[in-house]
Figure 1 (cartoon, helix red, strand yellow):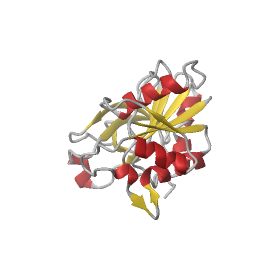
Figure 2 (spheres, rainbow, N blue to C red; figure 1 turned 90 degrees about the vertical axis):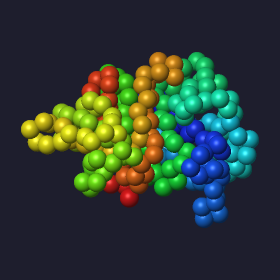
Figure 3 (tube, rainbow, N blue to C red; figure 1 turned 45 degrees about the horizontal axis):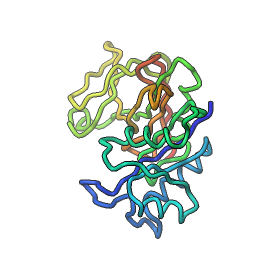
Length: 221
């Protein structure tokens, strides 16, 4: 594999405006995310942004940034544009999408997302953590991954939902909270491992549509 880590970041956050530049122990949040991705040591790391101030903060910290348009509706759209600029020849066969608001993401969680991608039949992967609080099983703000376990700690992702998720031994289904959102074999037609919002200190992986393979590992707090 020849992965590249892309971190989409913007200032136009509705819940916490300018959070990418929020000061955390003297450094902007985006720089902390950059550092965690660099510490994962799996490949080149680039921040994709539509904001010059974010690019300047990244470059001042010795990182690399690429400018994109401000019209994108999702981080996946933004990294698609960035990837077209950075790698038009398609040298990178796996794209790891680390969201820009995960300053405490464990580097080994980032590395763990690549485990299912060793299998060329796997089109996508995402990290999950088991839901243990009863309230989270029914909470609409909690996204749930419903999957069938095909091996210890390995799942086939069936679907994601905000609705109350089924669970139980007989159903062979278990609700897990995604630590990241999965993207597909796109950007263009290249495999993607995605890391997104959630309990950022935990580590785990799961693969969804494409092959049904998955791998989950806890730890990394």
